[in-house]
Each structure stands twice: as C-alpha cells, then as structure tokens.
Image (tube, rainbow, N blue to C red; front, side):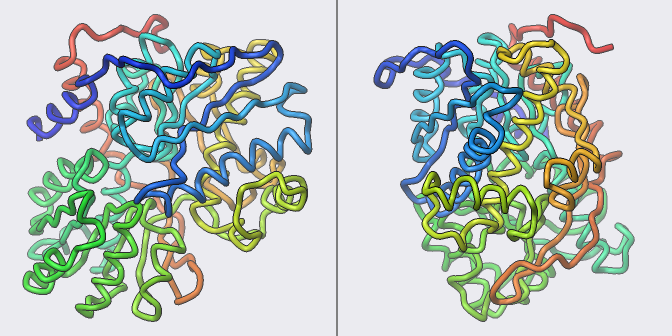
Length: 444
C-alpha cells in the first residue's frame, strides 16, 4: 500500500510550478463573494462535466436572484474551462487566485492533487467534494483541503459493505468471492486501489483489476472480454465521462448480471445508463444526493433561474438529474460555509481564511436541510478541524430503464476501518513531501 500512496503523493507535487498564465483576469470587486468554478463543458468528459457545471452555477445564481446573495452580498461566479486537463486546471487556478477567491472546486482528481500543495501556501481552501486525495480528510495535516461528504476510500468501503449485505450481511461471506474493479487509469481510478487490495487480504476475496486508459474509454472490448473470462461475482466501477456509458453497454453485451455491477457515485449519471437501453436495467451505483425535481430548492432554481433564461441547461427536464443535483449540492455546501463564516466573524464580505473556518464548522442538520428546501436531499453533515470529510451516509440507486430508483436505506461507510488507514496515509504523504506547511492553528 505504501508504494501506491507514495506514487500518488509524488503526483501531487510534480509539476507544481506554472509558467504562462491565461489571459489577465479582472480584479475582485469590493463587496462581493467570488467563487471560481473550474468546469469542463468540452472534451471526452463533458457528458459528466456539463450537468455538474450547470447545477453548481444555477444554485449560486438562484441565491443571487431569490435572496440577493448570501447575507446580503452578491456572489460572483466565474467559470474557467479545464477540459478535465490538469495543466489547464492549474492555469485556471493561477489566473484567478489574485481575485480573492473564497474556495476552489477542481472537479478532477488530477487537478486536485496539483492544488493540494498550493492550498496551504496560498491559503485558499480547496473543496474536492467526494473526490481527490482520500488522506486529505485529515484536517490536522491538510488544513486547507476538504472532501465531504465522503472520500473515495469511504466509497470503496461502502461498495464492499453493500456487496457483503447482498451475500448475507457479514463481511466473512466475501471469502472465496471474486470482485472485479474496472477503473479509469488515472489518479481518480487508482485512488481506491490500496484500500481494495487491503480489503481483499482482510476478507479473503480475490480482486481482479481492469484499467481503462483515458484514450481508450470508448473502446473497452478487451477489458470486458477479460471480465467474461474471469467471471467475477461482482463488478465495481470507478468511471467518468465517456467511460461510463461504454462500460455499461459492454457489460450488457456480455450479459453480465447488471444487479451485480456497482458504480461509484461518479458513475451514476442518467447519460451513463441511457445509451445501453434495456440492457442497463439493474445497473447500480452509490449516491449521496437526491435525484429529481421534488425539492423546494430545485423548484426555486427552475423559477428564479431556468424560467428566466439565466441557466445554460439545455432543457428544463435536465434539472433534477443526478449529476445536476450533485452540482447543486456542491454549491449548497459552499453557501452554507459562507453563512457559517459570516455568523462566526460578524462580517458579510468574508475572505478565504474565514471560508476555511466556515468549512471546518459546517453543521448541516436535518432542521437546516428542511429550512433550505433540501429535506431528504442529502444526509446531515458535520465537519470539524480534525475531520474534513465527515464519512457520511450513502445509499444505492438502481437504473429501472428510465430513471434512478433508491434501492437501499442510507448506510454508513466502514468508518472504523477506513479512518485509521486515512490518518496513516496522511502521515505518509506529509513525510514524503517535506517541507510541508504546518497547520498554524492547532485543533482543539
């Protein structure tokens, strides 16, 4: 496991220096809350990136239109196109960081790994919502990085826990089973491997890996021929962009039992399942946000943004789809952190340091979710100085041929197993990347 973590650590430091900025950016205006969005509406990952970008932007726009911003201060949203390219993502960061941004959303594990060492130096928070480096959940060692509601290691543990439930409920029932792991062969897909390999040893199952190179996402026939040969009892997928619908179609082609094919939460867009037609029925993924338009906050987006032609969404029917709502949740977390920071500091125009404090003191209760029009949209969430992820509950959804249906109760990842491993990985990361900026304010 150490070698894999070290490799990831190296990726985070490599090529940190940036030369040649993008076009000069306007300076921040007084009396505003600036949130840059690193998005990708073009390229092979656009199918996943567009709905998230729409959801993030529309929720913040809705707050401006409905409420006049947050605490009476308007939010300035600026998208920067990355194409899911790490270098372009760093360029977006460098070209906007002088504008007093409150927080960054890389929406790419590769970009996140490059921004992690910059965050502590520049003292600008990075929100990698349920992606990026799992070890960054340790707030004592990564004080400027946040990955709620769950890390990839939480996701991997949830998938294994769910499979064990299907096999009778006890992890010991995994002994002798074969679990396949098909993944985008990049930092994103490689991140959960150390945990899955450890689980294979601990619980006695065989882990077979099927990497998919980024330039071969739409040509997975060889991987799925190997799946047909190996006949794993379950398949777990860590896919993104064009990889997801291709994998679902290939799984259907070899008649893999779809109810035993489980994707991470980033493999659960409607457009990931639709292209396979009836063959996708039964496909499952993890999820941590609600799907559909039946939430007051989503209805407010339709009223105040979409109906006013202030959205880039292609059709109103796309509002409420899974990844659109994922973007909404991302912006909701930022908005709640801003509210928290305003309450803590007594200031309406906060800065990045205040935003970090707001993130560390996020406490989104069931009561607050109802008040915000988000009842049932997500599980309550609480972060702290030490815990920047929260290890929150997830659920499993299943494709019925037209929509996603919730087919499990909310359940917790394997926190007791994952947390000590995260802490150890964080310590190893820091030890491998000296000198590492120490946290200035100790956690109480």
